[in-house]
Image (tube, rainbow, N blue to C red; front, side):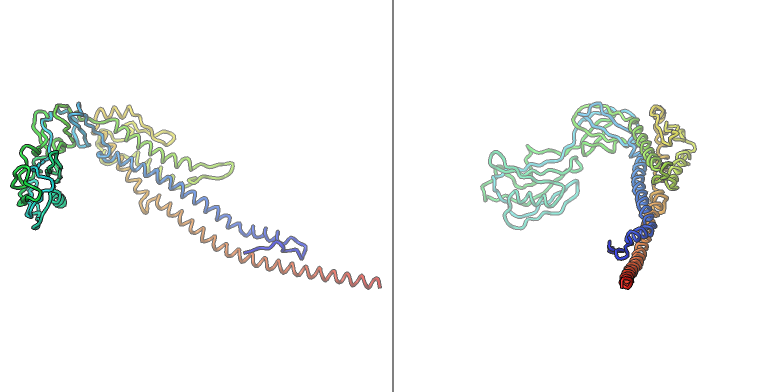
Length: 452
């Protein structure tokens, strides 16, 4: 509502100042609501930060939970120029002597040469790829160039790619290449398309496109190796089914030794990431839970039961042995060098962990997996709908809406109060002004009579 600074001029009293002070007192409850809205928004913001820290902790815990993410096994080739190697968690540790005896090759047929521009009559081309007959490619009666035929083959998406090459002697050839290497992906074809004499006779006699140049092209081959003297084969240069969890990639002919071993550095890095993520959560809660005795003000989490409950939950998870570890060699995180400090943070003694890995990496991974699972599940339980963190954030957002609704009601009520005060003060101002005028008039009249 608009105000005027002339209130009280007629009465000679600063009624505007009085009204301003009265309204300031009336707005005290609104100021309290504004303060609560600000502090609650701060809490929501800090909870958002905490939630992101919990996401990171959950991710780190899941890395421990799932051996496939932990990637605690590594494969090393003695000569990567001959043979590449990689391993996943299911690979057994050990050493293998390998000899690459043949690289895989995709079948490649090169047609006989034709004078550039030679056309072919209509007819059918039939492919058999990998032992399976493909749909017939039919060319209606007409005239087709090698490029036309190549395009139709490629459009059919048969697993064979056709390419037309212009040769140095002014001719053209069509190259057919299998999309995949290995004998299982070899192809054959029949064709009733016949070259015409539109551009002259063929450079070499050829009854059909199905008859390739026997002096050119490549025969489909499997890659072959000897693994500890045992013959193994693959349609590609990558061997994935020979040894469980181990992938071998043939690069060139030769010999190499592949060693599969536990990668303690990856396990240590994963545990350290978990410790760091846990500490980030603990630090966020602690640094936002202080109280300033001088100003008598607290921070966002001061006295907050939910923030304290999160740390209590983690403490319980950390000190409770998971059921699947009841008879395990390592039953606690402290057995693996992960201990709690007086500050409430975790600490990793990497030398202890390395010793345990050396003694039995399988037992270490089992323990880490169990604790990773319970920590990940506890975080999910907090964040999911109905969880302590989710409920707290929902409650704070609901409080903001209530504060805003109450503020809107108070603003309306105070506007009415100000309107009433202003009307009363305006009336008072008018009354006093009239009384002052009457008093002046009487004084003047009395003065005139006394002089008469």
